Image (cartoon, rainbow, N blue to C red; front, side):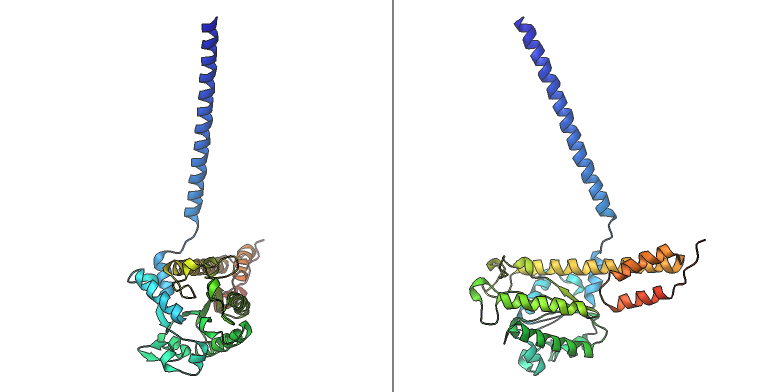
Length: 306
């Protein structure tokens, strides 16, 4: 009798074990299948290739102060042709004031000659310019710096009407080095004002490259400060570059998708194709590219499908 009971219990345990194994295998297969599907979907998503990205940045110039000098060094350490080797118009102690008053000792240079940024940008023949300023400009509160920043940008735009401008957020300072004007609160306010300003301008974009470097109160984390103040480590520049590339990749893909849709609408001349193109074009920020797409859409004569 005991042997029968033991045999019965053994059979029950074996069946349960098999069932558990089957369930576990099924779950594993389900996870693998889901992962495979996700990978396939991801593979189908349009992406910006390294070559395309380098081409985008090859025709770009970067303007900045000593923090920009650090960015130049970071780019150089990444390889010979990193990001297409853009022009680096950077100088220690560079500021709006030094630029405006042509203080040669603290101005950006092009071809070895000190000059105002608007002139250097023009001489470089760049199509895009990335500007990271503000740190050396807090001679007053955020409103004062904002006024100087806008005046500076208007000068650049007047001298370079076709250049696309990317404003990179002003990086913060560490908790222990909060100044009367150069402090996290003022920097946060400046970035907010600059983001709103860029939104209203044509061919001008604001990129938040710095928030991931900050603590919850908006101070630059100590591990990202090379001098426990405002200058940055390679870890900070890595975050900066990743956020910048993420933004520009998205822009490239949005403009590419809009262009493809406009071409389709021009060929098909249907209401459906036109609507799809219009939706994608409307999703673009104010730009010359957007204006050109809208002109092309306006010229389309919709064919009656009936």
